[in-house]
Every structure is written in structure tokens, then in C-alpha cells.
Image (spheres, rainbow, N blue to C red):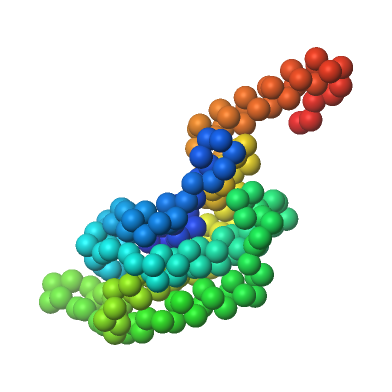
Length: 207
């Protein structure tokens, strides 16, 4: 997965459980959005100067709306498995998500440029015709999501099933169930608790 696609595969701006059954959103405020964007400086190098960018309310909303579309398409990708619990009850319709993703990606015009050093092989790169770095930022995230959803790793996309986790992740080995070890520990602890509770109540524990 490319660096920019790794950014998009988290859902274009991180949401995570807060430890109390709720959700923490890195994009909840303009300051939070600025911090998240600047944290992507290495991943977005060559696309936008993310390390120097400051979000405004319009950019924050644009990234959130793109994230809604991407997460709706992630939910489609993992189906018939359950989507992330964070937005399972309010998913954007898939056709609307597709339209939004494609519209955002098209906001930046890019043109191919051939490079061919005297002592090397020819290479191609895309040059942007867009002057607004905020447009380039959101368009780069949208294109990364498109690349990911059209690529081979889409079939390994999963919604983490650990209690309270709201992340999607790319499965890296055959038996992986959770996005990270701490989620696995929490899920196993929850299973153990359910088995103990069922034994105490004289019933059978769910698997």
C-alpha cells in the first residue's frame, strides 16, 4: 500500500474509541484537523505541503465528508461482514458515496510528465494544475482511496471486531481478527468475561 493510500485506508482522518464507549474524532475541531493534516506531512510528501498547512472550517468539513464516503465504501467492501460500529447505523448510501468520492478526486486536474535522465530509465509523474493546496489535499486523499479500493488489498480489508473499536484495517495474515494487539487483548478479555458470566448464570456462553 502506498503512503497516501495508507492514510486513506484509515478513513481520511482518525476516529477511535475513547475508552468509555464513545468515539474520539481527530477532526472534531479546526485545531484537531490542523494537527492531523500536519501529522501526515511525510505520507503526503509530493502531493501537498501538509506540514505547513493550517485547516479552516471548510477544509475540516470537506475531509469529514470525504471520510464519510470512504467509510461507506469500506463497509461495502467488507460486506457481508459487519461494518464498523462507529457509523453502521448512519452509513451514506453507496451510490452517493461513489459520487462524492469521484467528484472530490476530479477537483484537481493533474497531467502526466515524462522524465528521462541520460543515464537512467524513463519515469512518469503527475503534475497538478491546481494552485489551492487545500483542494490538492482532499483530492489526493480521494485518489488514494480510489487506488486502494481498486487494488488487491481491498479483499483483505476488515472492520475490527474488538469491543468499542471503530477502525478498519488491512489483514496482514490469515488468522488476524483485530487491528492491533491491544484490541485482541480486549476482545479475549470480553470473551472470557462472557464465558464466566454464562457459567455463573448456568447458561452457555456465546462463541
